[in-house]
Length: 338
Ligand SMILES: NC(=O)c1ccc[n+]([C@@H]2O[C@H](COP(=O)([O-])OP(=O)(O)OC[C@H]3O[C@@H](n4cnc5c(N)ncnc54)[C@H](O)[C@@H]3O)[C@@H](O)[C@H]2O)c1
Image 1 (cartoon, rainbow, N blue to C red):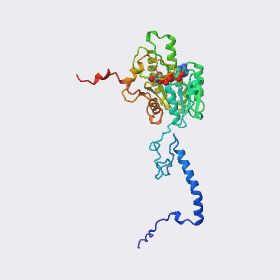
Image 2: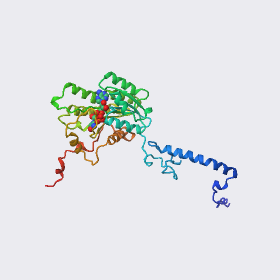
Image 3: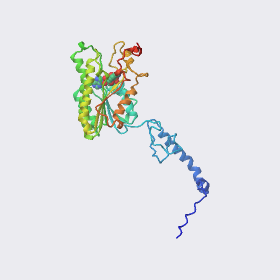
Image 4: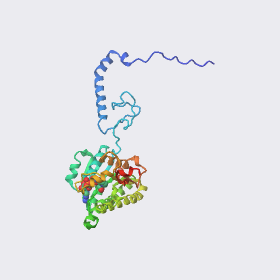
């Protein structure tokens, strides 16, 4: 039996609907098309707003402006827009009124985080958070040396859902010659730099562990590795905080909570610190890279550690100090041949 003949393929091209429109439809399109175009343009502008990523699927059309005539890539990176890694995530930051605290709060807020910010002075905290999106920010003025206040901070941070991120950033770094350091000065440094992170890692870490996820970053310093005569209690506190980082990483890891340390580069501007003369120049000269330290460089390191990209990183120390921590060179002479 002969095979049935294949249906003849139409050679005529499908007509553009605009050509075949009956008169009434022409009138309809003439009045509605401008409205539709306006709606699409408004949608495009909304998508282009800073911090928004393109949500078009790979089969829909992208209104970002760059892919208007092509199916959307669906990727925030390809759009040149910021990824929103912390959207709907609760992030607790201590020392939020300080140099790095302010930068961290702004960086996490820009990626969609809901923030619980704390510092000692309520006015400084309010001023530091003035430019952040108020609906996503809760402020808690807390003296980290006060145990009862720390308990209240832990309760407030854990209220609702457990925090996704804790950044133990607050720190004191006074310059005191070793033999002159008083017991009170020593206690003050240890209370803020070590005891408070310990208590927050217990209190908030427990809630994170119950939720089966979380990331803690302890802000330490390359001072943990070197013995500077006028920074010994400070270096000891950061060295011990890196030890606690590893201990809590071991303790909380099985419950899906990661704990890491991050060391910032040198930055001036602390309201608390008076630097000895020449210190800033000497420490800056240690960095190996040509550009000066920017607080954003440190924020990028912390946010990486807190993001899903670092899902298998725990118990580590990340140094964002431009290589200053490995630089023991004695000036340019190390490049000369004998
Ligand atoms: N700035 C640097 O060059 C540098 C370098 C290495 C490490 N670090 C570390 O980075 C972190 C942030 O440093 P920074 O330069 O932003 O300092 P900063 O002084 O600007 O900020 C520290 C914040 O901690 C707060 N704080 C101090 N005592 C407190 C207390 N008892 N209760 C509540 N809050 C208190 C202060 O009010 C301040 O806002 C610190 O842990 C510091 O050791 C800084």
